[in-house]
Image (tube, rainbow, N blue to C red; front, side, top):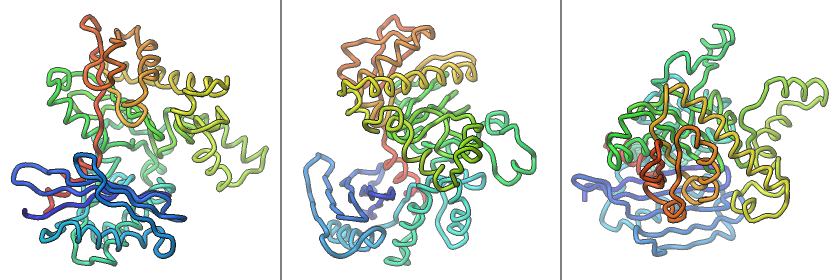
Length: 389
């Protein structure tokens, strides 16, 4: 085997990783895993491609946070045996206007990505800390940054521009869009599963704790619901989504909230959690009899339907709708509610197929082709990384 690629998706509380063998014609997933509670009580669980547990470990005392990456690399070496690690690919949330494709990481690239941290304060610092941790442990190991914004770089100026001053736009205050690695993967899968549909007008709904929609024409991003930051657009687990900026002015002027308090409110205490007062987890809300939980679910669906109508107008019509990510793949009731709202666009859901939850879920007479396609951002990162090594 020519080697293996490790992918890392570093967050504030968890570190997700996957290991791929570099085959002659394809990447073969060897294992997938996660270290949870990285700042308090780290616990690692790794499974092979068949889903069997191959490793489980906890750290009662010892490394925390990014310091866990060095022992993870040592464990990967042991797991590979005589094979070797060829490169590490990272999910990096924000690439700004400069990084429109994956990039080999060096000091200059890292400095440029650091400057973007204010645009993704809850994600970017953790992504970059993981890169630095790998570099400290294995300075000769190639690293590739893969950006959630890159898929949207070809959107027309009318879709990226705010109605603000040209001076602010020149400083990078514009709409970028996120979840690009997921959308790129879905665009590729759709081209395989339904080539004619992939060549048409499609909305992809990445619905998870973070949620967004992307309007695609012939597999390219035309518009998306997230903008300058990952706060915009749909209702999310703890993020507010679309918000009148006057609300921020109100909180500043009348409640005397400072920037840190407002950031905490919008990122951590809003969304499904804020509306329901129960949970940010859609599974909990769907199982709850609390009226506020039902209201949170209704708002989540309503915003998806509203934004879908807007994106359909941007596309000049709609041929298909794809559900993906945690909620999109695993919540049949949410799919049903969304499709009921999209009946005016021609959505006719096959309820039996929807309960099974994968593949084509529309009826034969539906004007919209409705699909459920599992996403795989890690495979997208691995494929981009392979291209560099």
